[in-house]
Image (cartoon, rainbow, N blue to C red; front, top):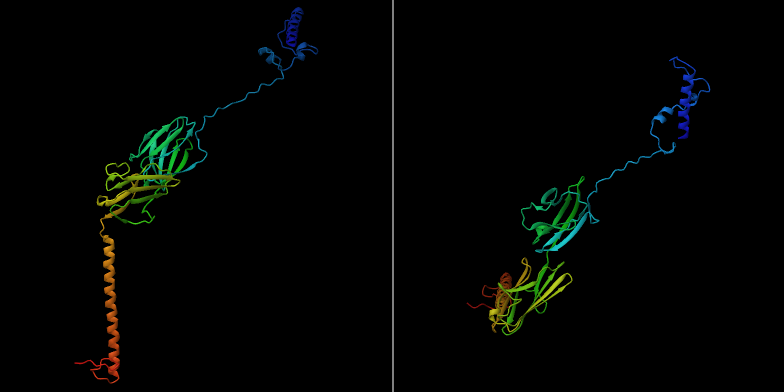
Length: 340
């Protein structure tokens, strides 16, 4: 500031000096040696015309450019491939958790080889199968619900986010089909079981390969549900849910002829097994009668075969005797005669 004030005063002084000397020439002359203008810096007028600031002359202003990028959507799960298992005829959710969606759209697709079938788009369902639906759970879970899952539902599904490039989460669904078997009181599997009247019917239903039981095990006699039956009396059902399997026991006390029929063990509506029960009043079971008849037929067949073998051997001996010169009446080689 002081240096600039000094130069201003010098200019005024020089101007007054020229006026006082009576110089009227308008020709611009180069300043003499020692003239104050001769020592002005070249950028004096530029600095003089610029606004005065208190900023030091050697300070450099740095300009930093900052750019804010839009958040990119990402899956909350750390994996891009998930495996889900459910048992036959149960309902299952396929989860797709997306953070920072930023107005993008979430879709569910079903993949079969190279083909993709649209199931849901946003919160709208486009599948013609009414078992499929979309349920959104705050804050970020786009859940695909599959009801009454069957074996055709097994396979890969894709959750896609309409970003650029698109985000894809692969979910592979496995349908587990439980194995059902009905055993008797001795633990033997048989399609038919015979009981005497007055005895206790005891059947065991063993169900294996159950990842998570989602329904109760029920017993039916024909169309009649036995689990809560109180009309007959003497019926008891005990079910134990074990890791990966289930065991249900059916007891029917004081069996009578009306207890004859088909007994079915059911897990849900599609997992079933049936056994036929016969209650007898002292008579021999039809199966045993059939077995005895078959044995008698087998004995008769054996007798026929032995007789034919006997005849063949006898004929061979007779031919040999005739070749030795025996008469036609001597049919046996040991000298016996066949009397006419």
